[in-house]
Length: 72
Image (tube, rainbow, N blue to C red):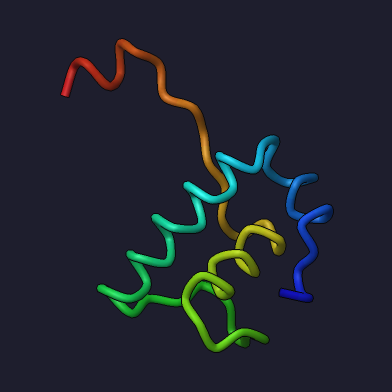
């Protein structure tokens, strides 16, 4: 993978584990629903598209508190 680079993605998301988790969940959502947030992508695959969304700032994440996850 050449674009976006792992170093530039780690500026957006703090750990490789979180990066992989967020990208995988978004790629799965794109493949099922077909919704795309950017007007044009370099990559043709869903994981690459998800990484491009993270790089552009269109896709972010937050860490849920235990109280939020146990209440559901």
